[in-house]
Image 1 (spheres, helix red, strand yellow):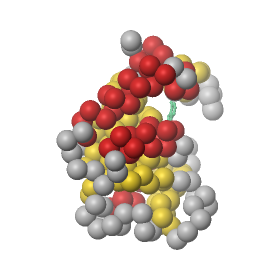
Image 2 (cartoon, rainbow, N blue to C red; image 1 turned 180 degrees about the horizontal axis):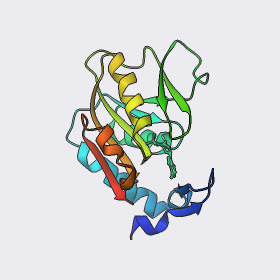
Image 3 (cartoon, protein in one colour; image 1 turned 60 degrees about the horizontal axis):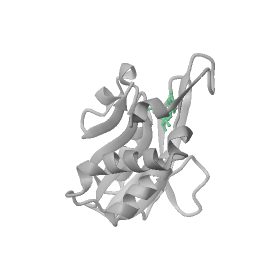
Length: 170
Ligand code: AMP
């Protein structure tokens, strides 16, 4: 089974010129979803992970399942205004404009090992902001795991200080 063929390309979504990688076609195929998770987990089965930090929203799907399998905690990194308690906030630059992520300020204890998970690595700005949030609370980012990497955007270069892994490079 080739996971890349199961992901649907949607041209011009959400904006003209963007080729959107639609993972819902993979999620709705039980065998494909299972295989993707097994492969995303394989580098961490023998690594101490205290928390998986999943990035809103598709990072919750993979990150939540990975945290369950690893027997560790899960932290949702959310868009501003969504989390109910005290948060820390990190702004980052997008191709056009900017965005931000927040986590609860008690979600990571000093020296905890954090694995960052999202569905897709593009320019790397989102994952870098997530790493900064974890580090501001004293966490140690032990890895970043993505299903898909858009290699031509060279997000990996922005994340050169981290151990980055992706299953599918487009
Ligand atoms: P970036 O910060 O540029 O690495 O963007 C990564 C975030 O944007 C991830 O949360 C992705 O889900 C989303 N994203 C960016 N580009 C695409 C794309 N072409 N298809 C699907 N999702 C994307």
